[in-house]
Structures are given as C-alpha cells and as structure tokens.
Picture (cartoon, rainbow, N blue to C red):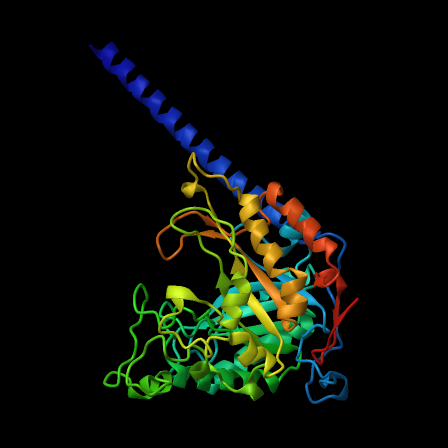
Amino acid sequence: MGNRVCMSRRTLAFFFWLKATFAMALSMAGLGYMVYRIYVLHRDAVAPIGTTPKSVPIPIDPASAVCRRSSSLAPLEPPTGNTLIGYHYDWSYDTPALFANRVGLRPAVVNAFMAMQPSATNALDWNMLSWHAWQVSLVGGIFQLSIMPTTLTGIPDEAYTTIAAQIKAINSERGVPMIVRFGHEMNGNWMTYGYKPSQYTTEFRRITNAIRAQTNMTAMMWAPNIGLSYPWTTGGVIDLPTAATDPTNFALMDTNGDGKLDGGDDPYGPYYPGDEYVDWVGISLYWYISAGANTLIQDGYIYANLKGSITGDSAVGLNLTARNFYDRFASAKNKPMALPESGAPWVASAVTAATTTTELLVKQSWWTQVLSTQTLQVDFPLLKLVVNFEEKKTDTAGTADNDWRVGNSSVVYTPYASFINSKTNLVLANRLSFSCGGTLSVS
C-alpha cells in the first residue's frame, strides 16, 4: 500500500512539474515573440527607405523674420497642381516606416488620433504625442494630429498653451510640420462633442490662437463629416438638441428657421469657426459596401458627394445647395481641401459563391476615381490632400472585417504603388521640403 502511495505521489509530482515546465516554456515563447516584435518595429522604424529626418531653423519663433509666413498659399499647402498622399495607420502593428519599407511609398502626411482632456498640464499625452511625431520624422512627412476633446466646456487657457508648446517642440526639435484637425466630424452624433456648434466654434478659435502664438509651422484644419445624411438621429452617443434641452445650439442648427432639425438644414455652416481661424478645410468621405456585398465605387461618387449633386429619392428633403461643400468652403474661400479620412473597404465575410469582384478591383475603383486627373485637376483643383484609412475595423452596422487598407496585401499595394508613382501630381514625403514659416515646397 505504501509503495502505491509513493508511486502515486511521484506520478502526480511528475505531471505537476511537466505542466509547470510547459507553462514556463509557453510564457517564455510569448515573451520572446513580443521582444522580437519590438525589435522588428524598432529596426524597421529607424531604417526607412532612403530618408533622414528633415531639419528646419530652430528655435521656432513666429515673430522672427525667418519664420514669418511669406507665401500666398495656406500653411503647408502644396503649390497648385499637387496633391499630398497620406495614411492613417493602425498603430498597434504598423508605422510609417514599416509601411514605406513594405509598400515602397513614403507618406507625405501621417494621421494619428488623440484624446484631449480638460487639464492644464496633461491635456494631451506627451509621451504618445512625441512618439507619433518621432515616427513621422523618420519618413520626413507632415503629422496630421486629430484631436478629440473629451469635453467642450471647462477647458482652461493653460491646456491650450501647453498643447501649443508641445506642438512647437515637435515642429522645432523633430523638424516635423503639423496639421491639427481639432474636433473632427463635429456635425455627427457619434462624437460626444457633436451637435454643439456654439461650444465647438469657440474652442476651435481658442486652440487656433494658442498655437499660432507659438509657431507658424502648424496648420489648422476644420473637417466635418460628409453631410448628405445629416442630421443623424440613430446609432449615436448623443441626441439632437431641441428648443427645450439646448435652445442655443438648436437655434444655430435650425438654419432654415422652420422650428425643426432635418435635411432642410445646413450640415456644415453652423460649425464653421470662421475664415481667419481655418487654414485647411476637409471632409471625411468613404465608400461602403452595398446590400451586404462588396461593390465597386459608383461613377461620379466623389463629385456627387463633394458638390451635393445627388438625385432621386436620396435627395428628397435635402438642402443640396448647403451640401455643396467644395464650392462653399474650398473654392469660395480659396482654401486647400483635404479628405483627411477616406477609403473603400473589402469585407471578406461578404464574399459568396456569386461574388464576381475582388479586393483589388474594389480598392482600385476607389483610388482611380479619387486620384484621377478629372477629380484633382478639373473638378477639384483645391483638393490637395488625400489620406487613406489603413485599418481593419468594425463599422457602425456591426460588420467586423471592414478592411480599408491598401498597404496590407501585395496583390493590392503593388498596383497601387505603381499608380501613385506614375502620377507626378501625387506627392510623397521624399519630394517635400518646408520652412519654419509653414511654406511647403515640392521638388
């Protein structure tokens, strides 16, 4: 009996240590993989294709002669006939340098989103902000910072002063120009700061004044969401204001004065901070799958959205004149325009036996229309920046695998890179130079 007990204990001990050893081996393997990924990210980040960080005269002083704005163009606006090509990455696994080495294109503009707290000292996470700026400096591009305020009330002056000082440091110490897109898509109900034109325009002006007091190497962008479906009443995080709940903003949004908020109202004007505060205008514009199927972008889609020139049932009840974004805010004001977020998705879960299209065809239909000679040089010559959304994410309808990336699969990015490189009017970082006064030159 004693021998059996002893054997049982030895067996249990053996299996215990076997499990412990196996668990330790798994944990070490996982740790080793993470170390390797960090090594790869660092290795590729510090060795992008054929570039060194750009330099500018420092320190940056907007009052000094060398840093005064001397161009008739807006800050960081490329000369006529040129459009900057940019990307927003999923920063959990991709960087501008990784993309550049993989695809062979150095982004002229790189976007990152950051939340802004109403804090005098920690409005933006400086460590994260600085890291993003470093990544952009490695490819010699412009940093498009999309600031998302957690609130539009109670923000002290010191918060904006601190942000401005951080931006000045990025401009001077990293040599990285910036485009600040404050409170993007403020005309949508999916943003906590949406549907608040009174507070929004006030805060846009405040942050603009703070930044301009410290540097001329950063441009301010105002960028609502495409407004053909404005106002949105479902699927958001906030409700439309009413005359009872928020009379100030209700009155501003009821642009036709009929006592209600609907398609007859202006989706953009109430949120515009004013010509003197806005350097660039932009608008978020995407293509989406139709009826659960991957489809090619419709002919004339870009034109119809930016001009508000839609017809049929979808135009009923809409103030189409107010939805002509390009003519109202780019052409009439002579301001450079951007698509600071854009793209067409491929949804693998929507593929069926009857599917006749491919990921390449869908995305190719997007970039060939958006970046065509007709679009950029005939219809919208002030469209001077297009940023592709390089993420795979869940959309508001719950579809989990919307893949907006053009730089993930060689089947897509090889012809995409060939297209970009074939167009001399499409500008990447390797052709950029800039001054501390915000003047941008293209070689």
